[in-house]
Length: 552
Ligand code: BES
Ligand code: ZN
Image (cartoon, rainbow, N blue to C red; front, side, top):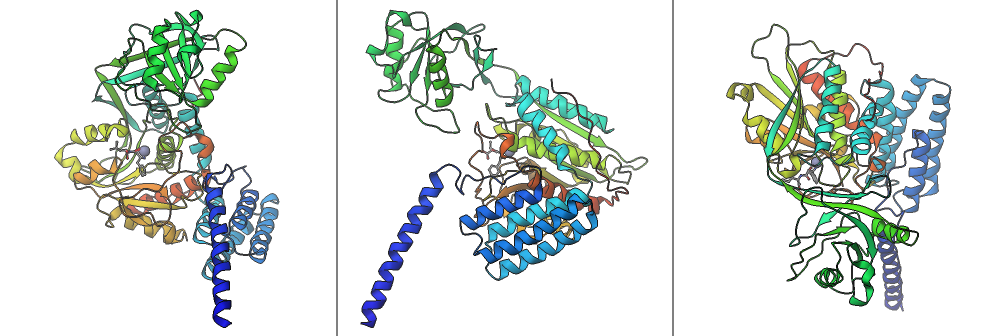
């Protein structure tokens, strides 16, 4: 009887586990689920924390209602102090909130991720009051770079515009600035402009083995051709650009059928919602008209516009030679000091084509700009350099070029490089700020950051040292400079691995998915680490707002 009972308990447990498992699987793919959850950010940090606490309770990261209640009780207290402008009390309350989180984590009442995320919000609230680093300024820079300018492919006019913006801001802080030009490989420039809709630019990907365009490309009206089967074309397709849904038949056959109907170009739109542009293969077909792909959303929007009237577009696909990617270097030299030690903060300003590059890497570049603003008042005996590199996405082209042009002596005098890359994803699971070295070992960057964290009372678990290359700290490391890459990733990411947000290198790498809270923590800890290394004392903790260039 007893054994049978146990068996029964086991099978029920298995059924429950199965149900839970499928439920979790379901959650992972549905919209608004935990995997694709971003940290709420409405501007009221305490309200955001309450909302996040509810989400954590829903997905089991917070064990029970008692825990929820004790967390929220604390927060409504702070919220009141905040409203009354009693900042000292807010700070005290936030410090005790951290103790509460410590306790709840050791009791198993909250998960590691809940602990990390709630700590980050807390640190944001504290940092905004206590420190000179102001993530609001960072968010404004991110907006300018990723929204007003947009994707900044190495060598493009947009990368140049980004560089000029960064330079003008750094110059306004009193730094000596230079724009360096590093040669890059030939680049395919893609353009899909909707002439009948305010010259709107639509993200486009070229399909290999189709010809490029010449001059300004081709201009024509779109023709909606279903999935591109022969029966989808009438004589009206002639002289137009065929708009074809992916799927059903091969891309090669779609192109062949479009050509046979006299189309002058082909746009294949995705039949699935995703963050990237679809890749299709022409097989053995070699069309003599250009073929590109666009997203499902953009394709369906065209179809719906076509049901109301003509849609005229310009399509251009061409390879450009003699391309240059650009670095912005801002330097602050100590007065009257010969051969000073050099301290670098780095980032990359380029993005992959068509990704707005809000987190990768307007976030790191804008963090660098805000650090530069605070350090503008430094007048110690070290040399500071802020370097936003171009061409990182091509394999560290800008940073290699920069380092390759340093003298032996400059390299020898370089003490550290802090690389800011993806410093603010809002994607909840990336709850820890990894300090990545090329060899996975600790160095002056990791040590100084850990000491800073201790002084700021930031839990060291939030800042694991990890082995990862993949950014501009690599060329510095190769020259023997202690360097590290700061990036938010999932706890437990294995050495060499990178468990990061799903928006990475996609059309969804937008400012909406950037967390000012995580940027604040990054800025606070890096500011403190560098300050202590160079002996900088900020006499005023007042948060000034940086002067900003108007959006162009
Ligand atoms: N920010 C990324 C690096 C990164 C990606 C760090 C994922 C951690 C997790 C960077 O901009 C990038 O994408 N680098 C390229 C480098 C390559 C071209 C040598 C990469 O990793 O693909
Ligand atoms: Zn990057």
